[in-house]
Amino acid sequence: MALKPIGRREALLLGAATLAATACSEQKSGQGQGDPVTIVYTGGNFAATLQQLMKQKRFLQDMGLRPNFISVGDGSKVIGALLSGQADICMASGFGQVLPAIERGGGLKVLAGSEVLLLHLIYSSRPEIKTLKDLEGRTVGVGSLGALLHSITVALLRKNAVDPTRITFVNVGSSADVFRAVVAKVVDAGPSELDYMQQEGKYDVHGLTDGNFWDGLPEYTNQASYASERAIRERRDVLVRTLAAYARLYRFISSPESRDEYLAARSEALGKDEREEALAQWSFFQQHASFATDLALSEERIRYMQDLNVSLGIQKSVLPNARVSDMSLAQDAVKLLAKS
Image (cartoon, rainbow, N blue to C red; front, side, top):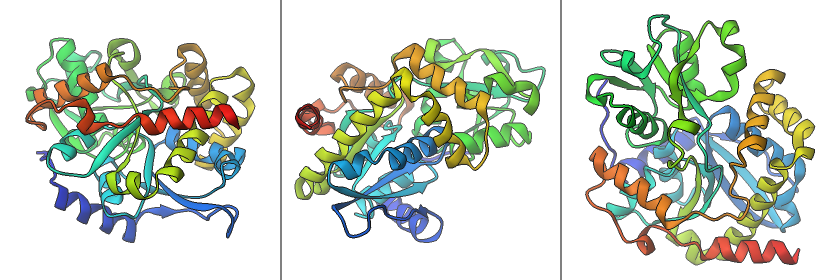
């Protein structure tokens, strides 16, 4: 299936259509209290767990905010929601596709780091596919071109001397959608979250021996926070408080005391109790300290993402860091959190 980059207009239309027709809008907590903030996120087990835990801990409400969460299928739809003004900020999602959108004139800025280290693994239900090299001539499920799942897969393939042009990439949606497509043999393989590592027999899948992203591609930034320039200009205080609330959440998840609440939040978010999968995810955070607890995202990490985009042909040139990011809001959020 051929994948083509989308322009700003297409992103706006796609985001508006998706939010109007299929986005999951959740009930606002503390109705009538605090300043409203709409947070958009992509589907996936981790993203759903993060939002459920935030609702349970009420860190946003503690910052005088009244949150609303909307879920969309992939990064292009997140961009559409932000540019159309239907969402104020994306707190934790892949941002590779944000950079070419900025290059094309999209008024967006990367604001902070989130869960920085990739927690993905390439799975396959085909027993003959054991390594990345075995993917040549096969179909691999990802999201849209340039978004997280596609770009990390290409980067890992290249790093292991596997030619991505010999692989057919199929846009099937989020990481959860990719895993379902792998299990159903709709695609031959695909990257999804590590939750299922301990349950491979249950789903009749296996991880590729060299398909581990957290060790194989540590320089790639998994998730970041970003918003439109209009939201930064008109709602800066709200965005700073939102960032502060999430920094508090990241610090909580990174602590050993969070285990039971994290497992309960995941069960509630997914509507099922998958203790082993939840423990695998939580243990990863403890072992690798993968959250940006200070919200920092270095210029070097952003530069790596731009270089990768240029090599993929979805970005023409590396932009000055000041054009693509504004870390002053994250700095203000950390100061605010220190005072609270």
